Image 1 (tube, one colour):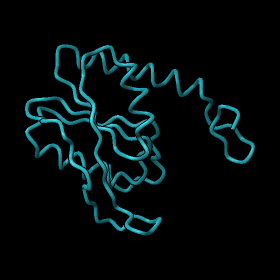
Image 2 (cartoon, helix red, strand yellow; image 1 turned 60 degrees about the vertical axis):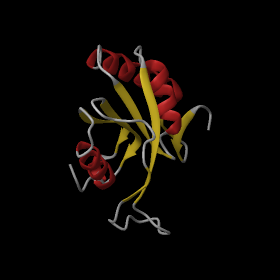
Image 3 (cartoon, helix red, strand yellow; image 1 turned 90 degrees about the vertical axis):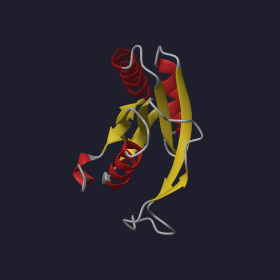
Image 4 (spheres, one colour; image 1 turned 120 degrees about the vertical axis):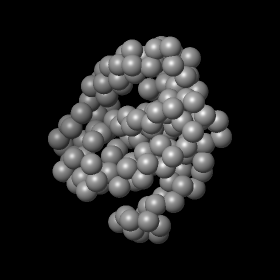
Length: 140
């Protein structure tokens, strides 16, 4: 793909633009979470590369883990029923959790995850996504 995300022949975003955005996010997260216990929770499978790149761009001691969630079943359309297939293996008690997702589409899954982890003993829960497809948003 010539180091770019493309639709047909149209370049949507270059690999350099992605790299710069990840670095910018890393600086902002470093600033926002200075002196705090940060846990990045990557949403598998899509976010694993973004989570790894983001982790390297954050200048803090942090923990990283991955969760797996499904809302699609065997279909390509969301069923609306969300299930957490893999819980984090890190104790979240008193820590700041940053849910890391590659693409937020309808928002249904991320809203469910946010609410789920806000009921955990985590100190705070926020979301970081690489791409926000607001045109398909159902849940804020």
